[in-house]
Amino acid sequence: MRVASLPFNEELRLQDLYSYDILDTTSEHDFDELLEIATQVCGCPIAAVTFIDETRQWIKSSTGLNIRETDRDVAFCAHTILQNKVMIVENALEDERFHDNPLVSGEPSIRFYAGAPIVSAGGYRLGSVCIIDRKPRHLAPNEQRLLEVLSQQISRLLELRLKNQLLRKKAEEQLVLEKSFLQKVLQQRDEERQSIGNTLHEHIAQDLAAAQFYLEMAATTARDGSELLHRSREAVRRAIGNIRDLTVSIVPSTLKEYDLKELLDILLSRFHNRTGIRVDFHFEGRRPVPQGIAVDLYRCLEEQLKNIGEHAGATQVRVRVQASATLSLSVEDDGRGVNLEGFRVGAGIHQVMARLEAYGGTVDVSNGALGGFRLSITVPLRKAADAPAGNTDPA
Image (cartoon, rainbow, N blue to C red; front, side, top):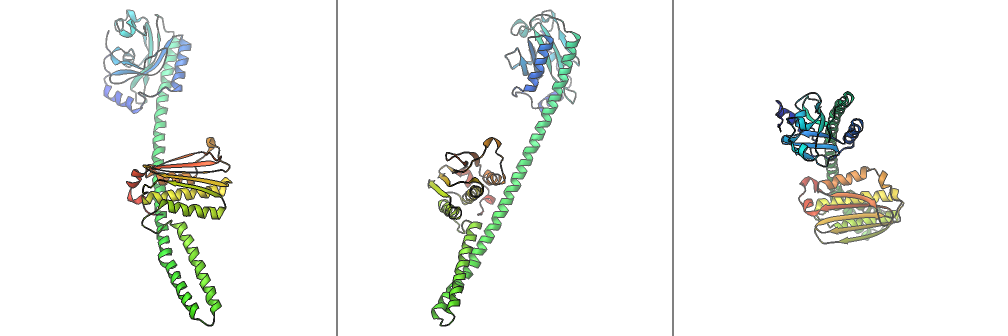
C-alpha cells in the first residue's frame, strides 16, 4: 500500500478547508441528492462526498457506507486531491497503491473507484466526490463528466454554505446590537421616569399637601367664604390623588427597598378597577428580589396586562409568582388566545425579552389552561443580583 504524499500547499489547503466549517456537521439534503444522482447514473452501489483533513478522511455524505471517517493514510481520496482530474482505479487488486489497502482487503471491499476532486473558490482541493463498486469495471466518458459536474456543484454548495454562515453571523451581530440599543433606551426611559416620579412626589405633591394643610387650617377659622375654601380644599385633594396615581404609573415606588408582592398587588388592583377583569393572584416564596429585577418584572406584567385589557377579550386573569432560586412569573387569561404557529413576537414581547436578557432570564409563550394566552418568565435570582448596575435603576 502506498500512502499519498502531502500536497505542496498542505498548510494553506487545511486553512481553506477549516474556513468552511464543514467537518463533523450533520447530513444535508443537498449533498445527499447529488449522490443519489451519481449512483443512479453510474450504477454503483456506493458513493460519497469526503473531505481530507490533517489526519483523516471525513465523509460528509454517503450511500452504501455505514462509516463516517477513515484514517487519511488508507483513503483513496487522499490520492484524488493530488490531481486536477478524475482519478480512476478500475481494479484496486491490480493497483500497487491499493492492492493491500484495508479498505480493499476488508469492508467495503473496494475494487472500482472513481473520484473527482472538490476544488474551493481559492483553488485548493479539499476532498472528493466518488463512486465505488465491489467489482472491477470501467468508467464511461459520460460518467466521468458527471463526476466533474457534481464536484463543481459541491464546490458551489460550499460557497453558498459559507455565505449563509456569514449572513447568519452578521444577522446575529445585528440582533445583539439592536438588543443592546433597546436595553439602553429602556434604561434611559426608566431613568427619566424615576426623575419625573421623584419630582412629582418630592416637590409638587408635597407642595400640594402643604397647601391642603393650610386650607384646612383656614377653613376652621374663616367666617366668610367657607364655600370657596371647601371647593379649594376638594380641588387640592383631587390633584393630590391624581398626582399619586400618575406617580405610581411612572415609577412603582419611590422607596429604596422594593416589596415585589406589594407592587404587584397595587398594579393588579388598578388593572381590575380600570377594566373590570377578575384577577386571581398568588405569590409564593420569601426570597428577596433585587430592586432592578423587581421593577423590570413589574414593567413586564404591566405590558402584558395592557395587551390583555386591549386585545384579549378576557374576563379573568391568573397571575402566579414564585421566588426561590429562580424567580418565575406566569400570566394567563381566558381570552381568545393566539395561533402559536403564526405568532409573531411584537414590540411588547421584545421589550420584555430585552429587559430580562441582562439577568439571564427566559420568556415563553403558550396557550394556557384557561384557554387564552400564557406568558411565562423565569429569572435566576443569583444572576439578577449580579447584573450590571445600569440594569438595576428603578423604573
